[in-house]
Image: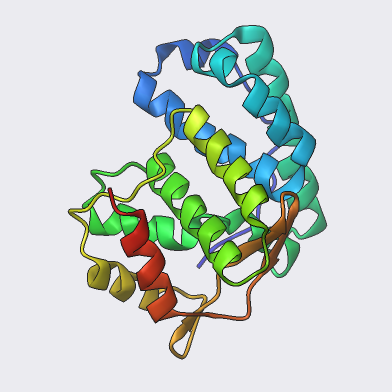
Length: 207
């Protein structure tokens, strides 16, 4: 059972980021780049241009990026507080990402798994003719430039990942509802992707 309770305040202290090891800091970049992919192509371009500044944790650049990320999420959540429509686009990359995270025994971190899931969603969008290869390549290049993984570990069994997907609440019959893309900034909930195609994409992404 979940509840929807609004906080009285949200405090953000950038100094906290200085305490994070590189891997944990990079985990957070997966969620940041997600906002550019699903909502704001200009923000995505800004992240591409500032990838080096982000990776070295430039405080001025970070402040702008975090502020913009918060505004994007706030706008989406405020328009769909109870998670019945638009808010579902925040799950971009998380459908397969959750399965990867669990199947790895959480050796693959959340941000890394979401990054891999976003790459799979991009490739599914291309294969299903929703997203142009050029747009797909641009998105993948930004993910990689931020130091995030774009390959799924070969040690993860594809059938085990599919079993994880079959437990997903977005499953319908032998199809899984993914958040896919028509263009950067134009996500949508797909009517259902056949599991054999998902398996093919997973195999193609394995390192």
